[in-house]
Length: 93
Image (cartoon, rainbow, N blue to C red; front, side, top):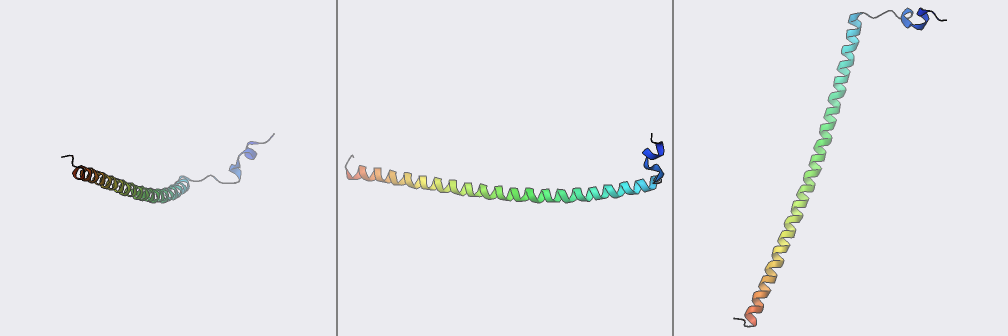
């Protein structure tokens, strides 16, 4: 059977004082805060890149839609002019 001193490491290391624990805690918190800030900066950078790519895709889609609309108008005008030409040349007046 083991004695209490063998189960605990208290005999090897003296207990820390409140100021030592506080110093370690502050150090750990400041490190965690700086890591958190770096992570936030990286997330913002990735989000900005995503938004930039989405905006590029949106502009591309708008440009293609405008081109389709223009082609449809041109096609409609051509067919309308052909109908007028047929009407005038075949004497339906």
